[in-house]
Length: 562
Figure 1: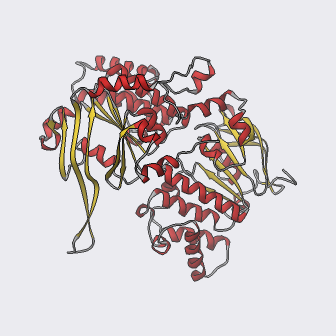
Figure 2 (figure 1 turned 90 degrees about the vertical axis):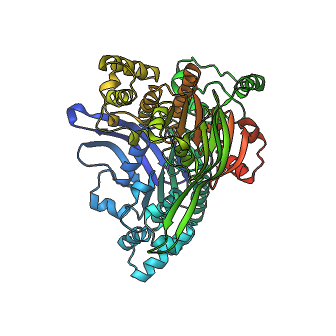
Figure 3 (figure 1 turned 135 degrees about the vertical axis):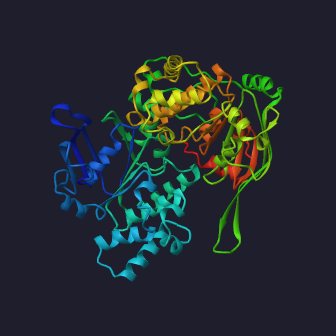
């Protein structure tokens, strides 16, 4: 790097809490970002990535935060300046794209107004000039119908479009440094690829510096020049993309690289950070012959679930006394699921995957078609018969935090469905069962009395899985159940799901937008687009020889690393 760095972090330490009981979350880190450079910061949740970015932006609370060391921007110390001084930098010289656009955008204000507000604060433009500039920015970030989106509220546009609005807001004042904090985590692989290409294009055009924060090393490799790997508040390794990927030194970096499901082979189990750290992991591949033998035993049985010509329509009124608009979320879908198999269901957001899962569970009523489970058509069953069957068909939700009652302890959350379905004869018996379940999903008895907010995302997802297996179901629908988790935690949860499948004889419908994850889990793969089945067949065969152009596009969008 020539000349002085644009941003220089020197021996930065950050602690939260009162003096006598402070928790140190950043431990004496040093990092430089040059002008026109793209730096990647990688690490799992709790490693300190986002806290570092918030410190650069001056967004950490003054009360209860203790900062040591220095943050220099263009040679000026900015870690100890006042809030008023920070406002002159924030948005103007240093901007940030947040992880979750739905919570970062104000739901009560239009998208155009929120970007215009930023321009009016920093640039002295007239109202008409501001509107023109916002629409120009929306065009620049390749938003469809920029004039319509100007007047739209966040809930009226997709996640990818919301993220583009956030990017437009971030680049509106031509910042010298842009921080992108997990900007693609909740997005489909195809939308994720589009956002990465957009960021690359904008960086090249404006020559701004970019800090790209993620837990996914493969994703980071497609964008950045240099990588810093963070773990438990420290930088454990730093170097070029090539050296980090091809010659990693730190055990943690090696574990992060290994935790992503491989695309060129099928492993029986994914390596995790703990298994690599203690040397207990040996990669065991599943050969095509072993797979064929397993499939022979699965597919000679009678199907557990048969879906025939299933349709689910939604209606929306265009206006008073006007005709209704019809949206076919599921359109003439047919497939079979056999006992002991994992059916992978893949496609972009809005393709109908989750609606199909909810319709199988009869949480949504089918418009047409039939769903046979063990020979019974679920669409014709009365509510009471359905309720009895719900014990056998369970759902693991995408977001474990919103699916757990924040007012109930973990133990109470596990005992409640047992009481409803008559599992166990007494409170003592159910409590012992809850303890067993916690241990089975890799937690311990101390979690029984904790509350959801006291747990990490991976721990909450394990509780969700424990609650599901308490019912001893036959068929489990996993709806994007690992998409919000770090790569390393994701590997642990995927391994756990496969272990439980072998131990309890579960059958899975595994819904995801991530083809790499689905390929690791699935025997059979069903690809959906716009409510229809695009392609169906053996998961390995579809990945190796996709027929549909849409499937080829999904596979091409998977981050491959270098």
